Length: 87
Image (cartoon, rainbow, N blue to C red; front, side, top):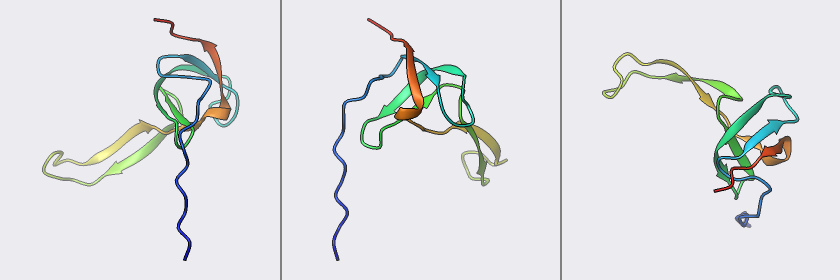
């Protein structure tokens, strides 16, 4: 049985801290700042956008459990650079 080859990291047109515009998907037309970039899967997490609901079971750390909203990754082809954070 053949094993799946791991994808090599690629160079992307955006980086952490850049201001981007979402050009496709449910969040189309909204802007935000990139929190993190995954070069292997070519996905970015934009602050405050693409929120998904996560159900948490009660545990020792959080005895109450509950429902939280977290940002899900967006493919890099669905974001456009608006303003880069030049240090």
